Length: 50
Image 1 (spheres, rainbow, N blue to C red):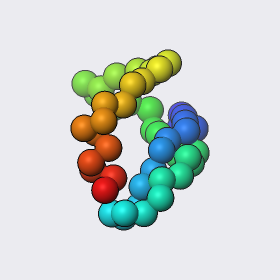
Image 2: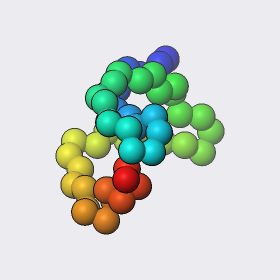
Image 3: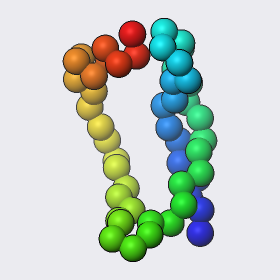
């Protein structure tokens, strides 16, 4: 089964981000599906976008 999830996506350096629905396949052997309810972003994580 494929799961539809929302993701923040950046396609290239210095490009704006967008919120998109992406498809995530079921986990395979040795993998797990985790439901993340909230997430914080550290300011140091933002340098990847720049």
